[in-house]
Length: 579
Image (tube, rainbow, N blue to C red; front, side, top):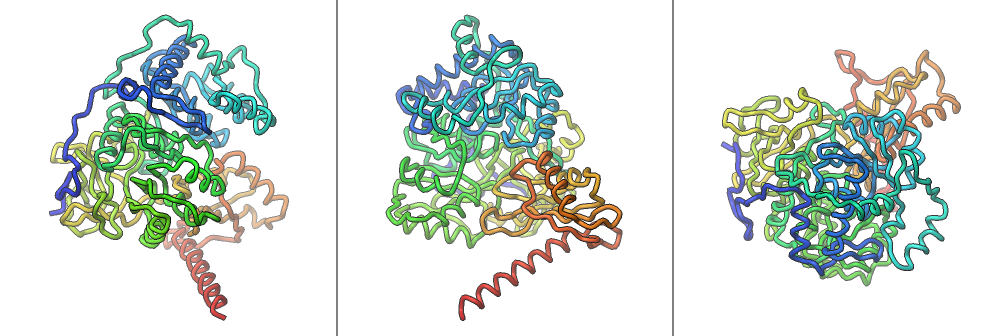
């Protein structure tokens, strides 16, 4: 029976079990600083900080939070991209026993209100670029303090004034005072704070809140403990067999994403690697990042590797230094893997893309393709101490090897639960007769007799666009809140770059015609309420939508229509190309 397995076979030198310390995330990183004081911890646009300097920044920021009145157990929303301040604040909050509520800085205003109030955050840390949006909503939130910083706060030397004279000129810098506190001023207060900042929290204490859709497709806060995130780092290092102190990790995945926080940031910093912090990704800058930094590790969603294939003028790009290339956040198609592997080989790399699988409810990855062996189409073998079991969908009955069912997993990275949502937690985390608590992923998969896992499809109706989870029911609710909209249906449409782009079908009230005025009003309504990464790229107006026999909107039929359109377009392009 294909019931469960941590490792039925061992490929390479990956241990079956690890010994996890009962400590905070910050303690793991501060210990790394003791071990590697002179190695560069992070590099931000050429501004480098050693582990010794990084540890000093964490401790100073921790004292600054305490001086600002942040207490153990309180939540603080970090609404930031990958900048030094975001990373320092994450560990500083963890050091004092507070909880970092990690959110996307491009979230719509109403989403931010929900994230801040839902987490009961007492403060928000953000960049000047997002200040206006936060100032507008702050009176409607639980937060009492808004902490502001600029990109230049993470720069040094000549780069600081140069930034202010160039990109920084257009960014309005809000003055401090009242409930607004500048990050630099907070650090200054921290320098004068004499109390002990180390809360000495344990592995079971909550460290961070990340967001995902769970089993119902509505956004919920995921409570992740110190143990969850520390175990993830240790498992990733053991399974990858390649994280070396002083070597460079290209940290493109954002810190508010499980992949970014768990792998690109925490795994790198626990084991003495250098995190190349990239606050904003673009195809144009990608080639320069690879040429300039020559990273040893790249970790990202399939979109990142699709972008790799689109790079221009890179004939001289040498990638022979690569030691690990990891894909997760969405399934990597067999065809895309072949193309990326060929690209890597053509540019001197001696490694292939290694695919993993996981979800935010277990921080990020929970299995990975072995370094020296892979099976086509497989998402790999479970991490150390992680058990996989394929069960009949909607039940706990284990299925035989080779039979398709729901992927469930158990191990030290599985979340504590959903924040203030016992019902959804109960659906996701289930105690089985074997005595273990299993995370029901909502994904269909298969396990073979050697323990290799194969992802098939998502049970949940969810769209993955550029690695981000987008929940159609949520978008439909927002679209239908417009006064002119009767009903809507949101689907994912195949896209060569994003894997899926988002399309909305809309039926107007009272059989109204979709005038330009109405279209503009609905578009503005969506822009105000939907985050940029979840924004539909196309709106199609119809008199009605296809229905199932019981009267529900047949979204599968709409998906089929779009797939047929894409197929016809491809066939037409191929015929045209041969003429």
